[in-house]
Length: 289
Image 1 (cartoon, one colour):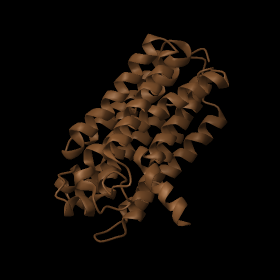
Image 2 (image 1 turned 90 degrees about the horizontal axis):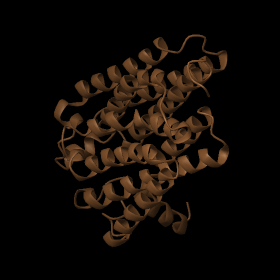
Image 3 (image 1 turned 180 degrees about the horizontal axis):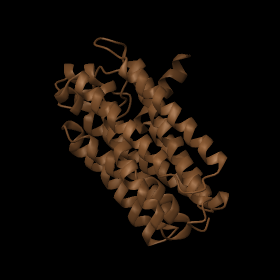
Image 4 (image 1 turned 60 degrees about the horizontal axis):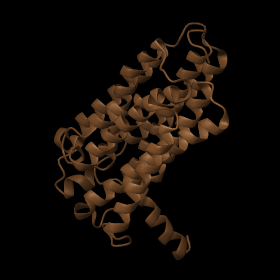
């Protein structure tokens, strides 16, 4: 990559583009399944993306002292961006994201604010503890709720099944994230859940949570789910499994990029699985799409 493009890429990492854009894309897809037109779905997707950008920028700002020398590069820690610039991005993205959510009404703003609060709690306190899995476990089930409430003003009762599925998946992904960073966190004396449990136990907990989420998702698919919904669920489950296997095979001293790739594949698989479940719900007759 040319130096100029590499420098831009290093700075863009401030907003954690992969999880931010993935959450935004999933929200857009879920909003369309809830019956939104493209303008509303795009607005809700942009709202989610902006909120995630804010959480990512704050994370880099708060963690800058311990992130020096990490790979991939952290822009504030390495002096590529000033703390004031990161602070401005975090505030502006939060304001933009919440304003876009508020356009769908106060209930949508409340859900968006709850999700943002989970991210900020992770950034400001819990990321440096063994409880780092909790914010994502709480926040992940809010993604489909945010999309559905943003379109219809309410969440169907049948969607409550997504709460335990999302909590298992969110907790598993959080442990997987710590597992991917285990060697770096251990060297920096960061007491993450993976550091505290050790690689073997963390990998077992991570796999059990994600397998449990996938199993629960498949076993609770709404009656009469279409072939298309089943196909999406199967693709999501297979993608999730591929990520789990990749991350589980990362051993001591392995390249961090392999573990990070495994975690990213898991995250994509989780998003596809959730979209498949909601697709089945939308076509089941249990709610008005």
